[in-house]
Length: 203
Image (cartoon, rainbow, N blue to C red):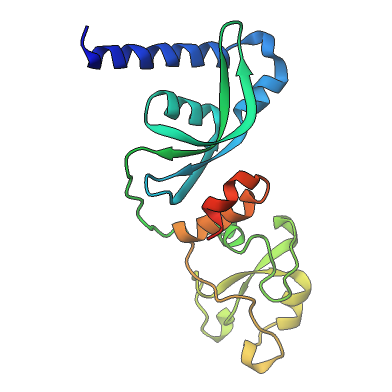
């Protein structure tokens, strides 16, 4: 048997063990919840690029596609196997991630603005927010990333059909297209719930 075939056999064994753990019926609901624990995914360059469930992260690690950089302290158990759950994984080969702009939609505008009114800073549920045209449509404003912002109802009524220079209102931040870079800010926000993510997200 060659070294290459031994390596493949070892990987197959690990995947079989992982399958045993993930399918263990005696583990109960707590076991299933652990499989959906969020895991931060880093590119080979340590740049954060995604968040996935622990189940997916384990498969990537056991296939040799990624390695565990941080563990979350939990284990998955079956009768024969115990696997440590990752908190952060890193891809072993660099993947080029195009900085593509997402589709312009209400959902993505609110996601970009973190459900925060861009005039007063109030954080609300999506159903309690409107989309405001910074330059009103009646005055030539376009429905674009640069002219649409999340806005609470009181600020929307206060602004009315005015342009910001005409009233005492201003934007918290300049509206921009929603790209991968913006997604990283969202991951920074999520990362506050897991201290082990901080050194990869806050720099």
